[in-house]
Length: 310
Image (cartoon, rainbow, N blue to C red; front, side):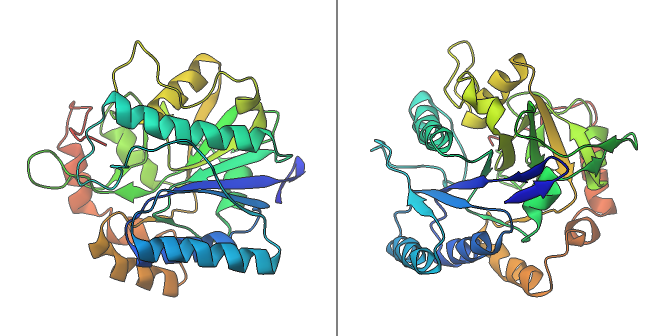
């Protein structure tokens, strides 16, 4: 259970498993099992790699032996996934596919007695105290004290991590966060990206891939991942966040317990060292987000959209 000033609250972890790499998936599943505060584990097996599928089956058997509630989501989705493609090109079929999977997870969560849904991507490696960081109190960017998250509040909080994406011109972007201010993936200024290096909580307009969602946000039925017809095809997180904001849900970015997003196979060796060295959340600010990175971000100037197809 997650514990904060509001008491003890049961939490369900949901992750759609699609890495295509048994090293990434194996470590993710191991770290999930060590995560403090999770009471139920819910997965959607979207892997095509046989080694990955075998890992999921082995983890299910191990969880049963340890008495950990482990469920595989049954969802009528037959179209092949393109999530791990090198460059995301969203169309209605891909958007609706992921929306159906995530909405099925919401329904399963609402049928449980859990108070929080923790939705995390399968290639995010995280410390065992991450949920405590998300649910507990924090310090806002203005220095004020923020209370922890309660099941009856309309707040969603997402831990920030950093990724490099194809830039559409044959290269990679600078490291960018999994939160944004304007859809599909834009910021009011480069300063609003740079501030995310500093620990605290920040209001954002979009988030995803490592989010703690209280029951109240979901139980009214409007906040989900279903596409909105007046918005173009884009990642399903955009529809969730749009629906949330118009129902007065506050979206927070948390910078306190930074995980490692192991998106590229070339990152595995570094990520494994990060794990074996204690998973220091300051590693990224110390090693990735240096002065050269700051200059690259500032070089965006008034260009609020980094120009990627995330």
